[in-house]
Length: 131
Image 1 (tube, helix red, strand yellow):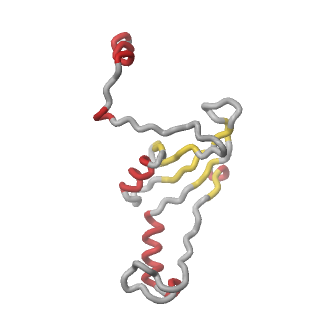
Image 2: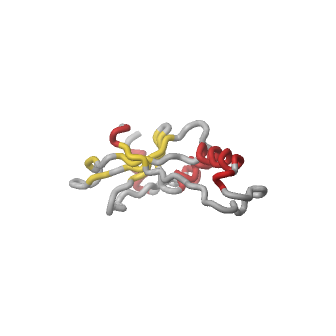
Image 3: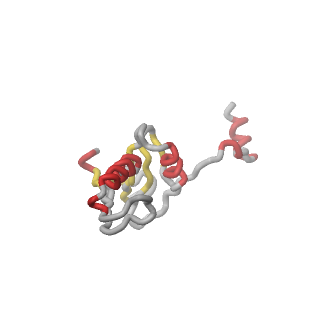
């Protein structure tokens, strides 16, 4: 799969000048060892995103699909996974992915709130028929 993937993560470059909002961080960003360490910590917790090569869409005939995905590792904060899922990503084992098709918004990720779910009359009939 690595050959079918292109890295879409943009590298963050610290800007020159003062680092606003960070106490005790004055001077050029490139000269600050503390800044480089904190950026490394941020990068460790920020996922790298990849895009798959186009392949036939399993839902719409004659269309191509791509997926935007990231690996979920044990060092990623649990809030990251929750935010990705809230943002439309789907999860399969240690991969979070979402449709990333050019010019198409047909696929919509839907989350069912299990605690609030109540089957309708049609679903109850189907359940009864299949028991």
